[in-house]
Length: 289
Ligand SMILES: [Zn+2]
Image 1: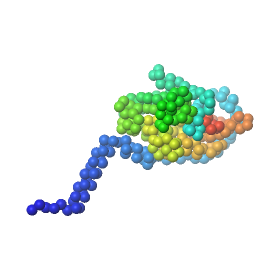
Image 2 (image 1 turned 135 degrees about the horizontal axis):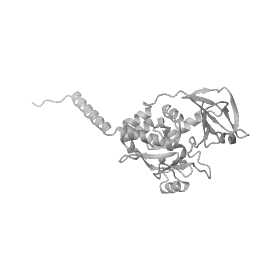
Image 3 (image 1 turned 30 degrees about the vertical axis):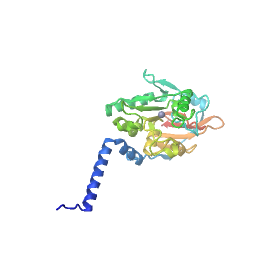
């Protein structure tokens, strides 16, 4: 006589089969578990940014700062999006990356070289660039060709040279995260001064869905704060109160709007400073005491 299987046994077998299939699927597609981990911030270690008041501050004119050997002006913290497009006539400070024909903002060639070397060393893969600096006209062409996917001309970070779309052979776009290099770039690029500009958790603030391939240079220590506190660039910059000072990782940070005399407040004594416009009428000052 045929023995009838009990419903509990049938259910257990079905659950085991589904669990095994899911495990195999996730092992073959590590990008899903990785993206879920990034969404939850499992690789993040909270960055405690402390509000501070430097001992003595003095107003220094932008002209004087531009002539000060301790100060470097760059464009690393410009916020560029649909609400804050680039001003007419904006010209990025560009440099060619190691005779490759890849054009990027001059402030990030060293940082990119270090990131690229780390990718090779840690994963054995070669990081390549599929899209670098774009002129207004090139962005317009992209937009005209696919208005639903491309950003409107003037609002693309690629026009600043600060953003790169990266990949490794056989793994590009969303598939980038299938590669070890892609997962390394997404979870470690902050150590080299880069952020994933459109993070998996950021669409409500950036207006752009997750782009694991689009890296953006913001420099240190900002990349550290943004990644580890699960921020977007929009969220980070708006968290910096105009005129306030913050301390993090041995740096002092302040976002300021120049006064009527075109001056910014800086500590009396300091080692070096990097000053970048924020593309909203202000500047972000990063001081190394
Ligand atoms: Zn891009």
